[in-house]
Image 1 (cartoon, rainbow, N blue to C red):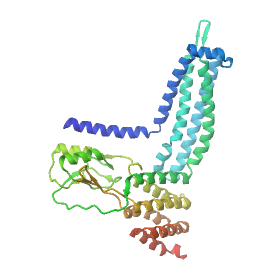
Image 2: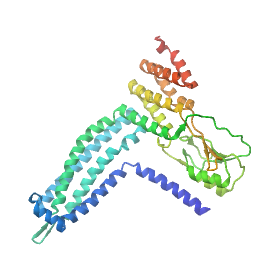
Image 3: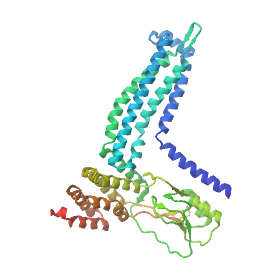
Image 4: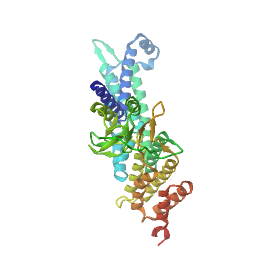
Length: 413
């Protein structure tokens, strides 16, 4: 049992490390740089092969016999690309700092994790690695000089590509930090996450009569990130357990507070408790892919920050409010699964999810609190709530519409 628990914890740690590594800003640049290093090894070998020599003999423009000239070309390219890299990403850092100060520092992950920026960074670093490796292969041996001419001309071609990448990169970065682009990115990621998690059109509240039960407390403090569904379901079937999770995903859980309840048993072994808790994910940070509610929170924070006296940007708040309106409409018509069954159709796990009313209260009312005195925000609230109430039957929407209608700003007082 101890070996099984160790393997389970190791697997979970590896999974968390894998996600952090793949989403790291250095992952793609490292992969691209490694590809360039392997390419440089191949091209140098090809340069000195019989085939490479034959190609250079047949194409006089590929002839580069002066070692000092080759070193000058490669050294100049290396210094230029290093300067280009420093300038490009100094500009990115300045724009990220501006976006964090005026919107929310929680959106930095969206900007830093941008794949195109990482590919460009990787291409720059790869070109530098390629150039440095070539520089180390040029040798003066007695009267003979070994110069990798084909590789050097390939390096020049990479440099031209880097220049065009830099030109497009300037345009791309200035567009990617625009508020509407960031808000649309959060909206799109949240929508995709909801489409994956909210698969039920007909919803009925999960209920189970609780008799004997056993509560298991959190072993550490952190953000509850869900659990390993397949292993947990198999364990519940093997031990004949019915488990209810006490918190929705994305909730802060403090150590030694109830985390889950075993509804059909009042006593289980310590080893089984450890095995169950080992399948629950509690760690810092949040991810929209795992928890779509985090997308709602980010949009709310952007709107609240935009309405603060220091920023005073109601236009950005309106954009966030519009995105929230679209997401609330989808969430009100589609519901996540609250009951997980085994392959014999027996209920094994009951999960807790946030209702539409909960999401609305936690993510829309703060915007109203900050923006109810702004006429632009007030009018947008009325416009969105009017449409939501016309298409859904959510009490929170109707209550909000009534609140907006009674506000002095809406009545023109």
